[in-house]
Image 1: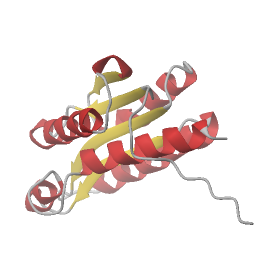
Image 2: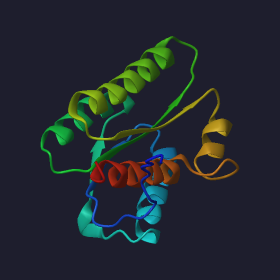
Image 3: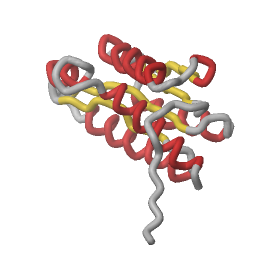
Image 4: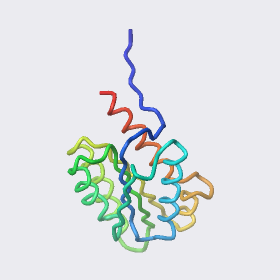
Length: 154
């Protein structure tokens, strides 16, 4: 018989930290609102959420690492938005943020979710923040709840 393990999409009592970039706040505030709303709609309570604001997406991994090291959180969600410009800055920030967030999860064993919109245009970013393609903040929160519940089963 096959043994299967899956996390459910309920908040239960999982303690989740949200690390949110202030850069491109006109997008990231929609990601944050959707993440908080998703948490509440799936049975979460405010006392199980911690929200930390950082300057930009580059600062997400180091902050997530510090939070994970406290061992107070069952999952960490990193929310940001990087829109391509005319320089290589976009590639450097996106690469550092993505690798850094992944590394936090691998180093600490705390599920660390990459909820950063990476877009070529402002229109694409808006679409991913709730207009056409759902909201990345909500999707990231669902991933955090699922992983927190899955890890509690091991």
